[in-house]
Length: 478
Image 1 (cartoon, rainbow, N blue to C red):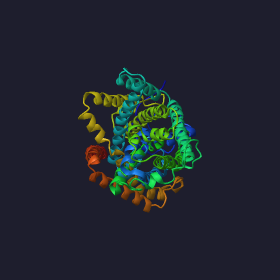
Image 2 (cartoon, helix red, strand yellow):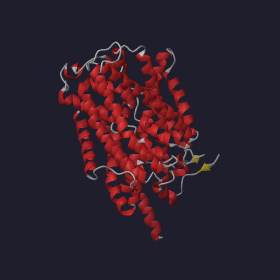
Image 3 (cartoon, rainbow, N blue to C red):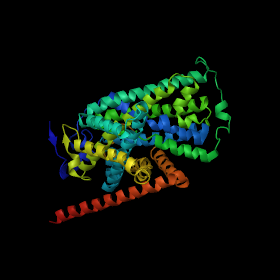
Image 4 (cartoon, rainbow, N blue to C red):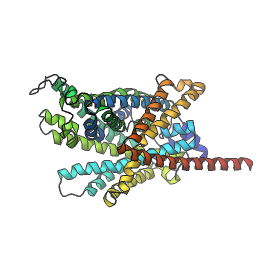
């Protein structure tokens, strides 16, 4: 077993900019099939299977339009991230790109904000998975299930990266298979081919208030819900740095994943609101997928979807522990975190894995000890972090695209469409979503909490950047 310390200061530039090697002594253990499934499965979680019910209840049939609008924004963001990651694969992904484009403070802010988001998400997913298990095994404590899941995925991520890849490959395959099967059943039911069903036509789409039953306000709530449901795609560009062929891997994964995920999300919403009345309480109480399958009379629909949701939650836990540990390792490799977190053992940043897992488990304990204040504060703080990350991605791409065209145009194997117009369109879309969040009472607190965290990280990052520059000046003068 080898033991590799965090890179010395002289190596930080290489760690941040190398196009062929991951930072901090990581290995190339992921195959193309792993990347493809990570790209497809990373974004398919409980937010789609269960959480989308709240969006349907608010927007009605117009939830299809809400997911289409946010889907276009996500596709633009991923195209920008794919362009930068194919040109310079790095385990820090957008954090590295932000540092190269805007300065170390930007990489620090985007990286640690995303790490915080992933660690809190690990805890939330553990709680969700534990609730399903206690439903199957009444009387068992939730914290025990969370502890078991944490041990399993911490152990998986402590081992070779290919173990993470294999777990995520099969988890993602099951989720993708479930959605493909659901879409197939839905199309058969809509066309009246499914035994025991009649074609619903447009009754559920135009009846009961029409396509926009709650007007523009309902569409706005549905749009906000759909934006955050797409979070998770970024993990594939983090994982690409540890693949056999980073440049080709990330290019192919991003190209194929975007339209497939849009199809899964938008297609699922279209099937659900066509088959089931949007006002059906079961859509929220049971989740839209279970409600649809129950409506069609599919036997044991609830238990089948519980298994799928459990897999989705466990998959997200696995991916988020991985993503958090690699982001922390990359930040340390660039001198933006405690050196101990950057140590690798056998090509795996085990201290970063352990700290990320412990932080996630700590969030679970807070949900029991302080559910009404500290835990709620954590939830609000991470509410809009994904939008902050997307903002850094777009801003970085504006700078790096011009720089790459001048210095190494051959690296642009993936290009952003309609540059720079569509990049500015994406930034305008993000600004609009921030504005809508400020308008809505339910999301205003999340926006302010996330803003406070972002400003704090930016201030710390800027102070570190100034201190490093001052040290460099002192050394030169000496």
